[in-house]
Image (cartoon, rainbow, N blue to C red; front, side, top):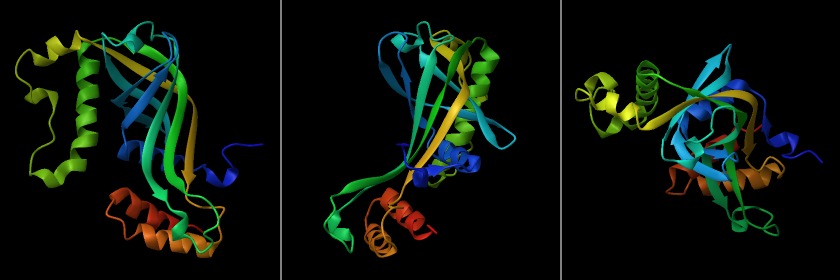
Length: 210
């Protein structure tokens, strides 16, 4: 049996890049120093329209930072998710579930050293994330050049920088694809009335299903 089912697999590489950029705060899983996970922001580098590498950093005291160089890793980017009640379908005989979107990345980590690579990563993270909160105020995107003198230089000594070379990437979209159109339409209508932004966003995606 193939899992996830083919209907939930998204093969368009642009969809993966879009989700990873919109939801850069991802879970990093490692097993080289015991099974561990840390949630961190990551920059996605692309080439020819495909994700090829991730850049990030860990506190040097984090056990995941130890022996990270050359370690296999798994990263989970979680997109929108929402609960779906059985009451919201035309056929109410099947149980509740969650609809969601995610990107799973498998690859190998390698350590990176140097002040300039750290500055570039922080600047890239700020350029990616700060515009997503632009409604808070009319501020320029923060860059490391705005830091007080010596701050970035001190900070870099307390982190472990790394790059993950992507070896396998899987984009999953579970949006009631296996349900009849009547059920999908009813679910989307109910989700569109939710107060949660994620629920409303997935309602629109369900409506756009072929």
